[in-house]
Length: 81
Image (cartoon, rainbow, N blue to C red; front, side, top):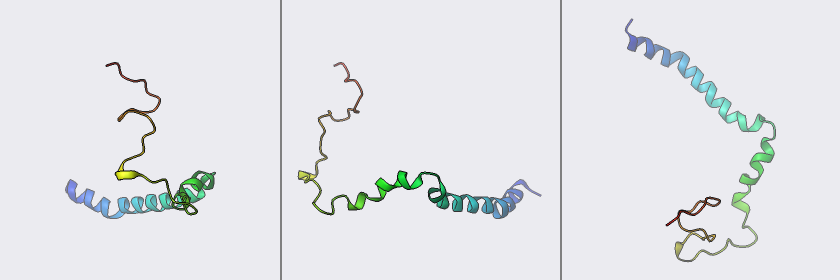
C-alpha cells in the first residue's frame, strides 16, 4: 500500500477518534478540574461589572494611560536615551 493511502486510512479512522476524544476532554476539563470554580469566577463576572454604574468614560477613543510611556512595560527599567 502506498504511504499516502496508509496515512489517509489512519487519519480517517484512529486519528479522527483520538481528535474527537481530545476535543470532548477539553470541553469537560474546566468543570472537573480541582478549584476550577474559584479560578473562573472572576472572568465570568466581567459582563456584569458595570451593571449598577456606567464604566469610566474614555474620550476620543483613547486608551486610558496609567502614567507609563507608550510601549513601556510596567516594572521594566526605562531605556537610556
